Length: 152
Image (cartoon, rainbow, N blue to C red; front, top):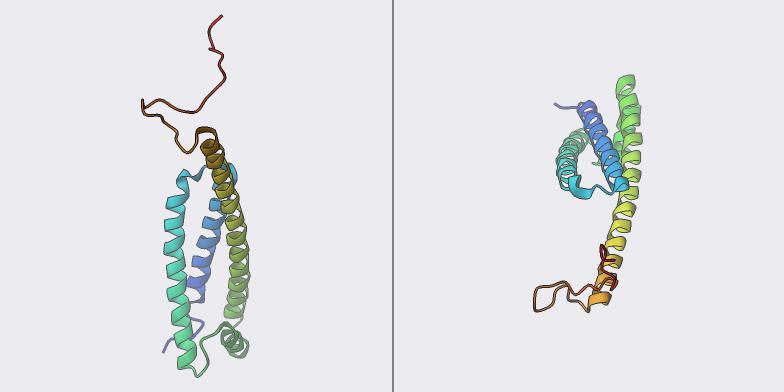
């Protein structure tokens, strides 16, 4: 029978990968190089799926041990098991999860800032050209200064 602590090392490793992806995502968002975001989002999805599967297995082990499927029950099991390596891994896993949650929150703020900036730019362009970027002749309706650059 699998014990609740058996998958902690795998969960910890997956959580480290998630944290690294979140940090990479944050760097991309700060730089504004959003072209690489789809790849990062896919990678995050795979890691989150892995974490979910591992946590579900841990919860099933807790239920099989007569406990509820919760983090509080896992803490009680860890406290009663007296296995120092599992206690340390569990504690570090909880700290990583907290850090990942905060990174994700901050990344959400950065994404919202990018979205607001894009919406403001679109509004500016639309107000300048009346929601039409191109006229019937296929030429841009965006008016620039009347001065011809390069002309004397």
